[in-house]
Length: 407
Ligand code: CTP
Image (tube, rainbow, N blue to C red; front, side):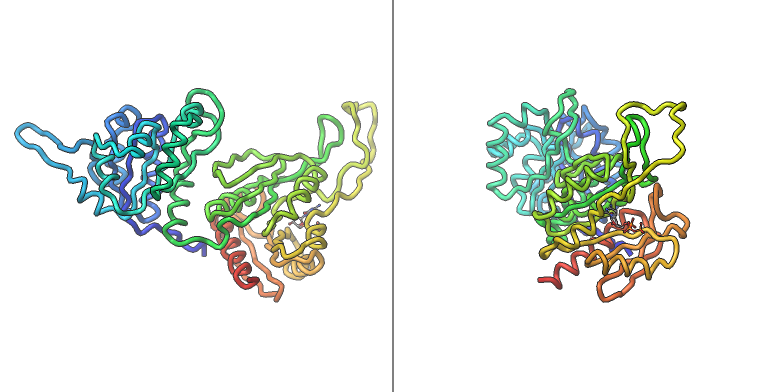
């Protein structure tokens, strides 16, 4: 399973002189892994940030920089017209403010710019620069000019910048760039532009200021779903309990919560505006009925903890849904299929993902998972043990089919 997503294309990768160039070896690997032939063309400034030897080794092609390569007694012309014709697509990553400005105004003082000016293939650009440079009206105008000429911008993302500032300007991560190229080349997913709500991770239910009731959920499954949905162009609202995970994709808006009650508030608020909701969080079913404001002491001699139920967010959505596609998870240890089918009906779901804790390598904390997808016709599709990224692909492939049928 995990439909192979490949990029059967010749990619001319332009690398310009920004600190984010240090990520381009990973980008070349990701592109090659996705099936692309990669020809790297670097600007002279890029040589300060990444070694051409690394890029030529990974791309298995000599890296080009100069219009004319001069060796003692010879000179070889690197034919920009031929290179531009060879490429099925041009990707410039990172693209500095300087290169964007030159592109926008037709300057052509190096091999990369000559290739781009000669190109008739699609051009994708991943800008990377500091916050102020990106915000500068001149840069914004140059980006708009390029977009107007059919250049597609990938990112930049928000985050910590090399200067230490935090904001927009970070180059989109290599895997996300590759994912977006795959989507663009392979045709638009019907999740493109779809508003999606995903819950992830555990919840922590406070007993006192230092103690809580929690569970072992790592959030990895929910985050894999969010990354894959965003790579397909969905606008993802990710509501997560306490986890040790990060997200990179600009299509993901993350809200961090702690308790089931906080998750319920955030999820209910977003639900009316959602087309697809996937609830993968391991929400606590119970919370302490009383939360102590101060740390409970040993001598308090607590002999029992009174618990009260939390609100079932998924069941609430099942009752409220008006056309939304609703996907739930079920974690079962006995009578798995029957229990999961029961939850599908009771919570008014369109699809339920049955997680079995009985399978080695599946469930909380692992990078792999083994699930069965059950739909409203009670068709059960058992998937093999897969990486959580591949499980996310399989779930979203199914969601895409359900959306198509719903139309
Ligand atoms: N869920 C939820 N809110 C809760 C509890 C669960 O949204 N308060 C969602 C989970 O995110 C998951 C699904 O409900 O998608 C299944 O949760 P699970 O705990 O397996 O099932 P329950 O209905 O709580 O039943 P039980 O614990 O008895 O198996």
